[in-house]
Image (cartoon, rainbow, N blue to C red):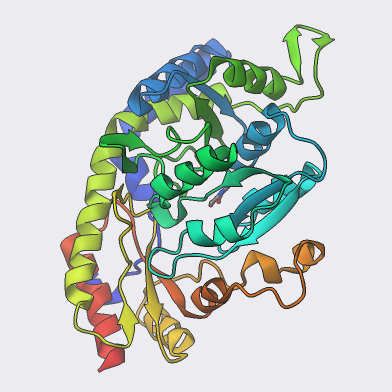
Amino acid sequence: MSISESRIDMVNLHSQYMLLKEEIDSAMAQVIASSDFINGEQVKLFERALADFLSVKELIPCGNGTDALQLALMALDLKPGDEVITTAFSFVASAEVIALMGLKPVFADIDPLTFNIDPLDIERRLTKRTRVILPVHLFGQAADMSAIMQLAHKYQLYVIEDVAQALGACYNYKGETKHLGTIGHIGCTSFFPTKNLACFGDGGACYTDDPSLAERIRTLAAHGSRNRYYYDMIGLNSRLDSLQAAVLLCKLPHLNSFIENRRAVAKQYDELFADIPEMEIPGLQKGAIHSYNQYTIRVKDAKREKLMDELKRTGITSRVYYPLPLHRQKAFKDYVKAGDSLNHSDKACEEVLSLPMHESLDAKDVEFVAARVRDFFK
Ligand SMILES: Cc1ncc(COP(=O)(O)O)c(C=O)c1O
């Protein structure tokens, strides 16, 4: 099949599996043979391996990234009505768990260059009830963590980092290269199949250097129980199962090289798109080391839908992450003041387009996608 007849998808889960097939099959077979499906040895090994990879003291695997965010909020001493400032331009999980906890999501606008929460707008939205800043490291790139941590120190706030899209990405914080999620109080991540480190279903984790927060999160994730059938807190049932941990253990040693491949793809796209005035390539945050979970461009002049159609016609998938900002979603209407302006988030929703991005794309695939984009703008 020639490349012009082939499909180029956003992700290619099958090719990643084929790369590590023998190892993964054998690791899964071992778990099945042991029948140790819940809290098995693989879970403990993965917990330690990922904590070491991230250079963090404590890591608590859990059921998914949304649970990780909820567990992080549950572990803090928050009261109903306390305010959590988060971004208006993201997946719903962060805002959803804030509201579910009886807390108030306060949406801040984004930096139009990086798509990440704008620290200046965070500061504008602080009130006496603000207790937490919850930045999302969107598309695989760090938010402006230096500015966010300055605000957190100045106003005595907690910082929960949503690292669902950015595991393995780093940030230069006070002269030290740190993994995302290890700068604030708690990092939360997801192992959903499209993430940088992906399992074969749902999975997630919280991580922190604070042992008392870690102990609370661990207890909360186990029904609030420290001793079997005795419950100290109202908790959740949120576990990473042994089969998923076995898969993740096989993939973790390859995470950095997968991310390197993603960076090479991004670099090639950047070069091939450099001279197209009707679109913008992803902007870089100072101090951030991007992991390119997504390669997201801006398409100007309302041409995005036409470009998507044209790509689809030539066998290329593209996606709009996200078509509507959180402050305009029906579910959050009670949390938004009439007339509140979050213009950069609105504009991003009109212009963003994510192109195929995964570690198995080769230079020819990228050339093919870029050529179709370039043809469109000719
Ligand atoms: C930014 C962000 N946060 C949280 C989540 C939630 O993760 P999960 O799907 O594992 O619950 C996602 C998942 O897509 C995400 O993209």
